[in-house]
Length: 260
Picture (cartoon, rainbow, N blue to C red):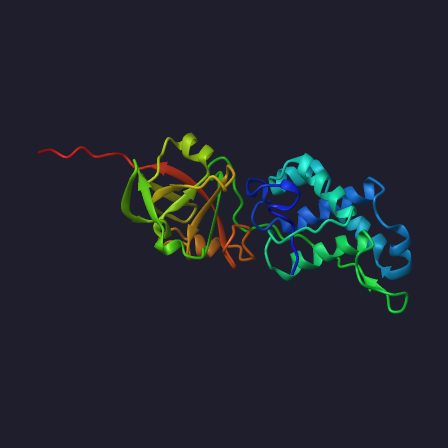
């Protein structure tokens, strides 16, 4: 099942779309293909149906709106649109959800690479975007996703050149920028707070994460309430089959002086 590329065309993992935004990402690419005159009009007329409905569906998804929703830079959205029109593959990244797969399949029809004949014609899929239940804001600015990473439970943290007993599976993973923003380092205990509760976990810094996105292995920790606000889908972080997403903030845990 195809998706939008994490490493395709030199687009690195830090430019993956926000969790749950694979559909608007595909729609923005589709709109850009149409706007730039890159759609295969002959193929569309001969082998598809529902193009006008599809065109109206993706019309609101401008590049500027896509940047706000997906977190992917405008230049990357345009690059993916032109690459798709050239027939370059968009490899899996946005997940394995059926809606995302259908939205990406529309791009194949749009660029003349879909399967179809005059009778019967292949219809465009009119996939609506359902935004995550738990949205980020100023108070909860980070999107937490949880899932499973292959082999992560046996990955030990290293701090100051020595191996720690804390394992990555127990950590909250942050981007280097967010770690610097919150003034935290690998192995430091922080509070992960959602709108419904909080938990504590040590920090792991992952250069593959972009700012504003955090990851924890497994299900949301007890007490966070994240599972009640979760949006489940295919995970854009490598190795996770599905995730639950919640808006969080990271809080430093005060250091209590111990009297001797």
